[in-house]
Image 1 (cartoon, rainbow, N blue to C red):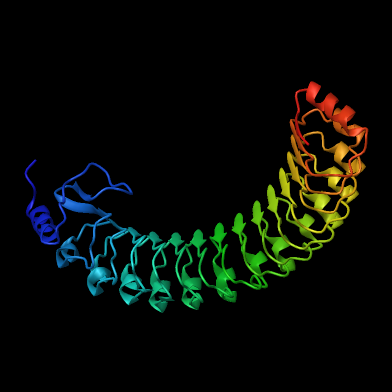
Image 2 (cartoon, helix red, strand yellow):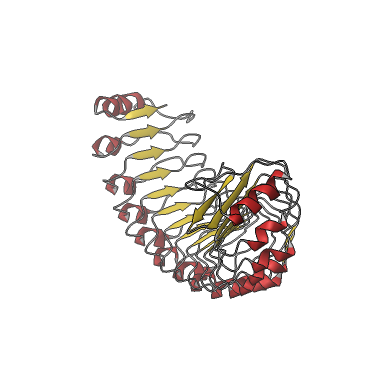
Length: 371
């Protein structure tokens, strides 16, 4: 097919940069090429080529709606980027950008923006003008703070600021009424926003590897929250009303310094996986037995001397990990767990003489036992 005039200009501009450009059927993460619809260039991708600047010819692609500049060493977003008024999907991953400047704020129809793995330390307040933005990925950068302007992104559904240098999140983040996923792991956060529970749409919160010492009580009012990941922090306890977060399916609070669990944890009717590894728990609450949907229980690395009778009521339990504890015996009720398929009790040096008998029965029933 004969290239249009617009295609010829684009091909020539990139040829001068030492990059061959050709039409492709669809853009992917590893291709260099462009897509065409109705004679107009609608998508452009440059991947794994050295490209320290974007040719001005790109600014004249009036129908361009997808632009991928990946792993090119690009250092600066050109001023004319804001003139690409049809742009919906912008990926700038793996470059050498130090900021997200004002021109991006002119892209009023932008829905997807990813600029992970750059050197970004500042974001223009103008970004808040992108009211249609649904996906914002800033992972692996150098951000020490987020501008309050982010809180104007009223359509935002996913915010990923993982692996930055954040010490706090703006309190106004609770205004993001459509936010479903918040990923802030591997930062320096000392606290989560006090009223984070006002994020009614929030389903997934990943805040592992920070400096959190507590979780705000309002988190229990996050009515859509399904996955809570706050491992490798400095948490001493869970909110006493954690049982009010009744949609929780998965809780991971491993690698903290929690000494006891609130009784309300037994009021989580759909909880399926509970990870408590490497804390300071000396006992598990009897209310644990009310978790009728629990499938995975991991208490590895806690100074537990026994497993409570409550575990016997977990008829759906399929995986129990209790290695590196201080268990003195394995309870006989484990042999009556109809769904149990895996048990890990390695490195419990005080296990009594009855343990081999229990383990033998479990193995005969088809359960894999590591000890």
